Length: 170
Length: 414
Image (cartoon, rainbow over all chains, first blue to last red):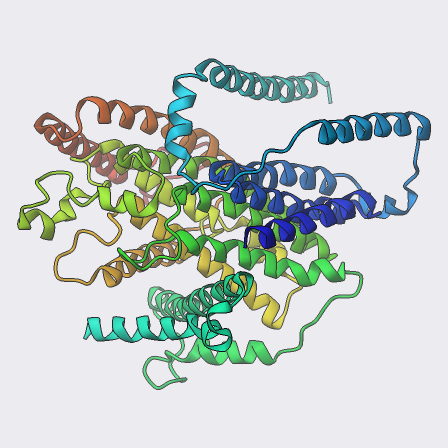
């Protein structure tokens, strides 16, 4: 059962990711991220990480993907540009891709993958909450301050744009 | 009567679930059982419930609107007040031509209604209809429901974009931005109830509201746990405010009036599903009513005690009564209030719901620490709420302040 679900999610995830990479239509590429992220969430769920799985759906599909879609939709005529995809900087891209591939393969080979029976999945929310407020309080606070900085930054940027407009004599 | 019905349902379900074991004996492959069980639970139970619910809430909506506008509404089909009207409509929709507009993105156009509907359908997995009637008792229930609405957003955008129609795309964008901006206040206003229960699990939240005030072993408290719902001010006045504001935010989440800018008929024809017809259009319709029930059920479980509280009513029926009452209030508001403008929409979200959300979370946290379940807390909560209600009634009665170029009724008549 575990194997069946694992291969199901793996095939869906890799297939959708390949579609994202190779489709010429940018909207299709963005929407194909739904099965990619969804199957990743399924894999997390298989590993007993239920909180991470639900967060994956909420953040990646609910926020990041929707942000991408907004960006695409507010860009003028972006779907028409789909035929004009060109591959630029082949050499540099190839170097980066090869380095990534090499390091990934090296990592896969050099790790000895320990295999053991899965224990019964435990509820994670309570333990995560306790850990966040005890052992990992500092990273948690840093992350929230970082998000706050981003929020304030967004407000400042949009405000300065508006102020610039209002100074305009017209 | 009730237990006989329960028995019948239970044995039917058991029979359906056992089919693969009859066919293959005990050597049935696990993946087949998995697919079979998901088909039975998802396809038969949930689809059946959502369809019946949507059919009758559409009928109820038409009757409610008719009553509020001094009309009769549907009266013919099914003899009694036209109760079969929407079933007839559903059959008509099934038989209608499935039109795919030229220039549309075919695959996405066909897939979008499925995405929208499955997004609202998978929320039903964690809704506890009764103490034992739930599909999955997820530890993350509330968070799960909030996360699954992401699929609806993506589906709505896909529907709007793939239709190749200006109204559709504007409707889709409006709907999506409304969804994602109102998701924040919705989540914030759910948190006080989660704080009070100390859990995200829906059944645990419902159970935590059974015995706040008294000793659970006393039969009196068991029968009258109606006084223990999280919504009551003597339990936690901040949760009372949260419940009202959660309800407002959930109206926006489900695109109901006064927040139905995404499908405002006078501007956008029908929003993101302008181009849809027949059975695909009805999927959007089903999703809308399914969503209404989900947010009502969430409010019921978190604030109105789920299936606890009223004496003498079977738990499942009680849960359904509360959730359907909240749905009725949504219909009531739809035919009472005018639509907001887009600036009012953002104003309500960012300047009303959000600040109040932070206040209620902080307040109910402090309340839980110091005042909950103490006599001082009961008195303080009740007095606080009484003062608030009095102040609100004063505001309600007072003459609206005239803005520039506006005349009050008194000035106009004078």
